[in-house]
Image 1 (spheres, helix red, strand yellow):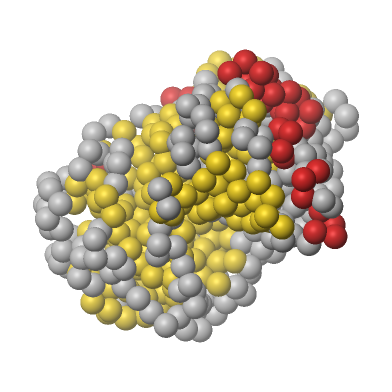
Image 2 (spheres, rainbow, N blue to C red):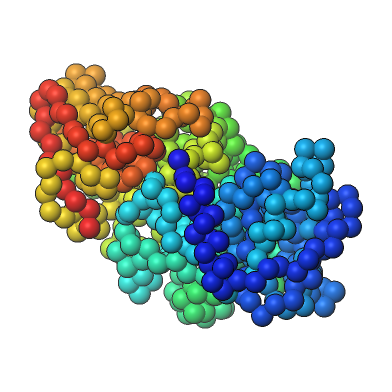
Length: 566
């Protein structure tokens, strides 16, 4: 578990060095407080207590509303701090929404003694579970990957982000970049909520031919404005994605549907126009456009197809070659919550054909194909404009059953390693192949004799096998391959800390669609991702061992090699 006292002391050291006590609050009754900002410092460091209800903060300057946000401001004790950028002369109008009978007298809240102005905010890692080679935010909450694209040698990754706490709230597009898909550089947030609502999930495209009129190679982003209703909006960037201007005629698409979100846009070279696929309740809607501004509804897909255990979200649609054949087919990605094979959220997909107007599925209506058979693989979407015709996907590595409760506080959630998607055939059907991105090959370092907290394990198989990762305190993860049944299981019930959710300690199981002869297993402090080396199986699971796994036991017809990740 996170050492909260250490985190507080780290943040406090920043305050002592460069901070100044915040202005004395003015208490107005009924949970209402006003703070007048009187400082030349950059931030007001807000003390957070995660058990609390949200307080609602309105930032006002010259009698005009600047922004609104929700934050679980500390009443009894401080779990950690988050920075709110402020300007001299602003007024913070704070409303505590919790029941005063439980929170006590407002003037005795812990926050008033700890709330401080500062020029810096300490983001040094204080979490033993923060991954070494997976993308994470420096602090705060992260869920769905958004607005991903490749341009001029740089991979751009946006994500659903809460800058004001480590649980879901205040949806903003955070932003990171990478040149190798492994090491990520944090960038300033690119899209924040406005009068139309919070900024929910979406996508970005590189408009190479200036179809929208914003300029050649402009980056055009599409997102859901989540206000009283969910509507679709867009923004554009002429500086390569560093900053975005919201389109003056937003919203661009509206609906009467309650769940109407997550626009994924792509250029359809076969049809000669843009397509958008949009999640609407338990189906997908498809649109077309010549210019990214004017959208025409084409069709819907999903009635009676696949799993309908929850709301459909975060779609994607792409054409790929079927490995070993001259066939090309389309794959529609549909993330669903709940309804996953082992509870909670997961990623399903459909195979078929698409003419720019209608997606025709070749699978049986009630058949469900899962892209990953772990518990922690959701909101999977691909990067636009990936080089060499690649379809590079990344997933949110968590599950809505427990995402807000996993044992970290400085940050919550990581992304999976990036995967290269493709198609393969087995017993007359077409399936999605999932391989670690080619860049992971370059990250493989020297061979080592035993597992470390961040490593790759390559297992050669000749039949039934069991791979057990163990730590010094007896915690373990058991992985079992059944050659006859063509299944792979991962048991994390005794993997470490499983107490934060009854839904966490499980065994997950996957078909392997044929014999496996080699596996690649990536271990990174809080996660295990297992892949068939031919891409026929993938499984992604979180783990929270009290000490890193440092021993491996291999039983059956298998041999393992272990490598550093660099």
